[in-house]
Image (cartoon, rainbow, N blue to C red; front, side, top):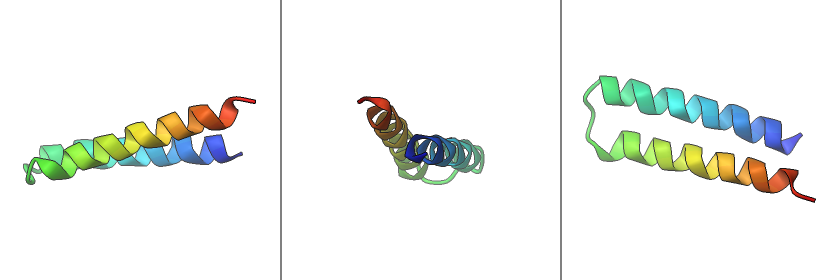
Length: 50
């Protein structure tokens, strides 16, 4: 259950990263969104391990 929610959150964060990149915002904003998305995917993977 938690892994599905975290994967959905990662998808939203990747979308935010792409959107902020297209809007030419300061470089640290899309980078931070990408890092948070990667952390959410890693957490989702770790929840699937038994």
